[in-house]
Amino acid sequence: MVQHSICVAGIDIGKQALDIACHPSGLAMRVDNTPAGHRVLADWLVAQRVDRVGLEASGGYERGVVTALREAGFEVAVLQPRQVRAFALFRLKLAKNDRLDAALIARCTAELDDVRAAPDPRLAPLAEHLRLIEQLEADLARARTRAEAYHTPRLKRALARESDRLERRVKTELLLLGKAVTAITSRSA
Image 1 (cartoon, rainbow, N blue to C red):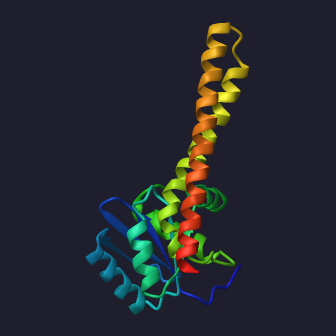
Image 2 (cartoon, rainbow, N blue to C red; image 1 turned 90 degrees about the horizontal axis):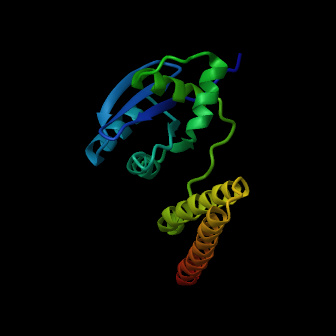
């Protein structure tokens, strides 16, 4: 059995609300997913002597609370949903509700050896652009795989055009991202 010397909180992120659970104490609460709720949360976490907070990346609803907690001095672990699902399977904790999810995220976070440092705030505006590029690359890979499965000339041509279009779009977006990175880093130098 692993002994934990830190108090950890897990947060289940919702569009409107945040469900929070502490590990190992089991204390829990719910706040609004708003700046005012984030302040209440930070104060509560300080009172609980929480050192580390874990939460799932959830389509952007986590961004505000991540920023608020990091600004308040907490170590924040942004977990991928598949990490938490795998941990749940390993622990045989398959019940699904927000309060139980928060407790599970707290336990998962307690097991982490290290937490990745917060990204450079100068690069934050580029994250969405990078996500688009990653999605376009995935679309391109699917389009190429799809094209391999067709033999009708008209369909093959249409699929080849779609692959070419996606490839051009990826190259264009990569060039634009490179220019944006150069602009940000040259302003900082």
